[in-house]
Amino acid sequence: MSAPRHPLTPTQKAAVIVHLLLSEGADPGVSDLPPDLQRLLTRALGDLRFVDRATLAAVTAEFATEIDQLGVRFPADLGEALTALDGRLAPEVVEDLISELPDEGSVSGNATWNSLGELPPDRLLALMAGETPEVCAVLLSQLPSLLSADLMQKMGPDRASEVMIAFDTTGAVPPHTVAQIGRALGRSAASTAPKAFDLPAEIRGGAILNASTSGARADLLDRLDAAAPEFAARLRAAVFSWENIPDRLEKRDVPRVMRDVPNETVLAAIGNEADGPVATFLFSAITERLSQQMRDELEEKGAIDPEEAEVAQRDFAAKIRELEDAGELTLLPAPES
Figure 1 (cartoon, helix red, strand yellow):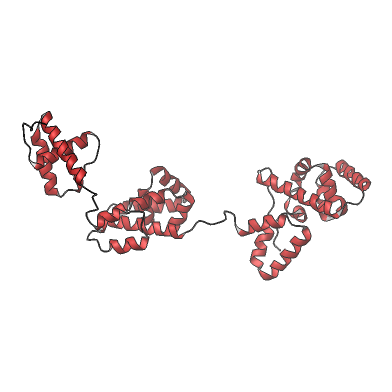
Figure 2: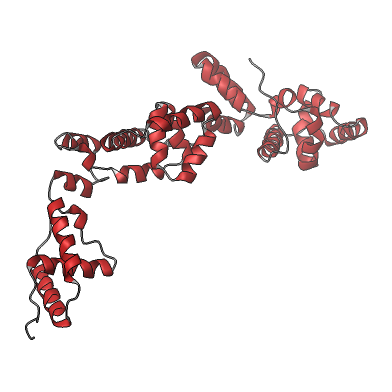
């Protein structure tokens, strides 16, 4: 290769490489240089004007050789190291190391804000519930606008007004304080472990009791009344079984349920308790002609096997719960015991 016609100084060579990288859309890291070097490099870029092909080839070949001989570049200081490891260190380690920095604002904690932005809105609302309006304003400023708008709408008008007013006070918050707030919220979010169960204990326990036999259910609830009265009360409110029909099913919904339950199941459920409170309630909610027809069928059918009756009553109550889940009827609140 022939020698370049216009030898360049080291600074001019650096300017050539920077220009090449910028033209390809790469970041050459100029912003990381000290101000004096940034000025020197900028002046060199402005003075070069034109570089012939042979000089350009020689400079790029020299740069490639230098890069080839370079092993790996490590962070220049502790601040760069923390930034490189952002989101990968334990919170207490980050706090300890940040305290050693001359300028805490050098660590932005972008990974922490990104992690917070990935939380479900309900988790974020719970996270903000115990924070001041100012902290909430900082958090919302760091989240995507659509997510922040959704959170503002869900937190209620009074709380949303307080938080929006607090935006006016956050303009003077220094970067290191914003970073500290992000780390603190990140720790709070991490310490609030997701629940293993989405449904509360009484709903899960109530579902089991709904599927139990009436005798076992009644016995267990009676025991809980003595051992854990508050939980027993919540369980009774969550349980809906055959015995609860007169107290919690509105009469106007009885015909709707009777249409959805097979006639054989209705007869088996009522069979041995035709004069009981549940049957009396059901008969009172349908036409006299239909109730008499059912009584006649029950008389012809005779006694029902107790196990068959238990299954039929459970299926009847399950259909009512199914209709409620579908929004086709609403059960009345459980009466206080």
